[in-house]
Length: 141
Image (cartoon, rainbow, N blue to C red):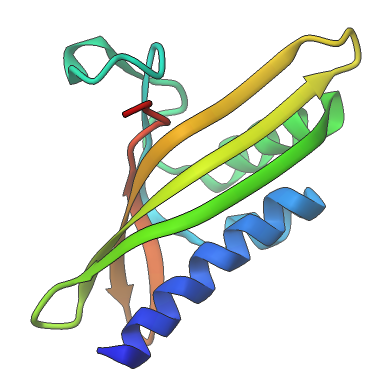
């Protein structure tokens, strides 16, 4: 299980590096082709009745263009992430990670897009690599 834990940490760190460097191609390497990413309307929207789907099921072009738009219109002020927990299935083919994030994007007019709180990243083993298949949006606890 230590090997799997290291692999999950690597994908989390790869994602963090992609945000830090605004490397959309690196970011695209983490997503499972069935990924769905629900977002709470606010960081206090713990009840999923209030969640939305911004981009639907993973689509390489749509998601890549969406992240490029963010990178091209915003500067990254900071991106602090801390892994709080990694849980691995007894079969070693599924895992989730709880990560606290504090990521601040600022657009050209000074408007802030602050991702601050806790997320749950859910991973599936695909062949010999891990892919994120679902993640909750950022919630404050």
